[in-house]
Image (tube, rainbow, N blue to C red):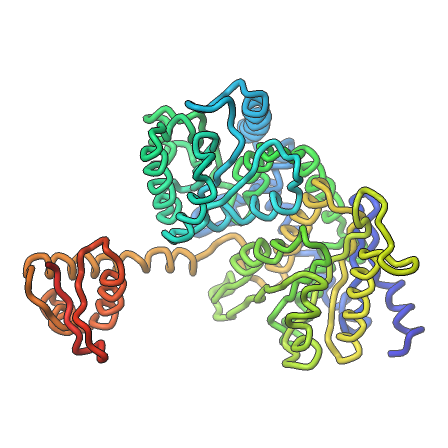
Amino acid sequence: MNELDLWRRYQKYLCICPTIGLQVDISRMLFPDDFLDTLGERMSRAFSAMTELERGAEANVDEHRRVGHYWLRTPELAPNPDIRADIEQTIASVKQFTKNIHEHKMVPERSDGFFVVLVIGIGGSALGAQFVCDALGRGDDPMVVRFIDNTDPDGIDRILEELDESLDQTLTIVISKSGDTKETRNGMLEIAAAYRRAGLNFAKHAIAISLDGSSLHQRAVAEHWLATFPVWDWVGGRTSVLSAVGLLPTALQGINIFALLSGARDCDVVTRNPHMLENPAALLAAMWHFARESCDKRNMVILPYRDRLSLFSRYLQQLVMESIGKERSRTGQIVHQGLAVYGNKGSTDQHAFVQQLRDGVNDFFVTFIEVLRDRQEKSMMVEDSVSAGDYLHGFLYSTREALYKNGRQSITMILNELDARSVGVLIALFERAVGLYAELIDVNAYDQPGIEACKKAAGPVLELQRRALLYLRAHRGNAFTVEAIAAGIGEPDSAETILHVLDHAAANPDHEIKLSPDANPFTARYSMS
């Protein structure tokens, strides 16, 4: 395609959304001119399904739940007045609580105020807030936000080292929708112990965000934590960033949550438009469908040309992959659907993996994200009439051109600026695109059977560990091979798992397991002194 043809294609397929400060250019995706027409009927059904979703239809059929993240930014859409009142009351409570913290009307035991927020959560209870806090944080924020988002002891220790001099000024938010998430529970217990070691009462520094009546909620009430905030069963973890899960940490950091909600709400209006060429979310969904179904491109590379968006690909990994990565269609057919999301940031990617994108396996499409405004103040010129931001802009379009000339496809998204409102737009845009795309490929975007299976998988491993340790404790002073231990507890087929369990136990002082030196792990002996 020559330059004039590309220019005409660009004019035809550029989606301009002035009310939300966004443009989406799909002209570098190599779909034929009749492709969007072929999706017309299916896209109409997808729009109808999204309308029913917003009206309160049961969408998570596995758990018999509605899916109502759209109500979070437009409470008047809620299907009954009680839900609307809950949302509005929670937003008001977040605002008032934040005001009390910032004005030091609520203070910790041994300090004049809270100046650090520690969020303990995992997956949807952390990724959204991490992205927003990193994207919008400033040097003069009233509070610094830190996250524990894993059950990694070393990771917890790193955070505690950072908080060593400020634990007495730290407000800890524990987030678990179910209240039983093990990684979050473990982090909470570790941090509570750190407060005790410092002579502090954890409850006087703690907040819970959970379902009413969950084990976490009950604990917070019984121990008189500072506050509790709700998350509802109709809010999935990966779409919870605009509930208290994301709003409370970001508000405490000093981010304008009302601008965030406003951006999402305005984007919802734009992305309800049934005219595909005027709907950026519909165009994204259509391009994902073209890439995956027509070109067998299973990888979506997110390349934001702005440092503040460097965590966006991590956030999208959960939103897209947990929603779309399904074994079965809604009719039960084996389909193995999914898009793998990865990315870096421009122009770092020029020095990292663009070489493979241009010359390696062509199994992907790229989504470039540009922000037009470089900074609030005027930039210096690093060369004659060229700023650092001009270079960044130049790298984006030269990279896009180099990929296109080698048959690599891409979408380009352009934001006028990066602020709370535009971040809200991004969140809502991809939430809607995921919902529409799921309808096109006939999978349920709102269940997660694979995640539930993985969560349950740790139980049998830990049970084997418990029994192996009991066996060694009952035979203190004696050393056994892993096969002997497996036979001794009646699990000869689980020898490999028991080997991994005991190797981990022996590498740590926690269980007092000793491993005799032996180059061959199958004849090595384990004992408890």
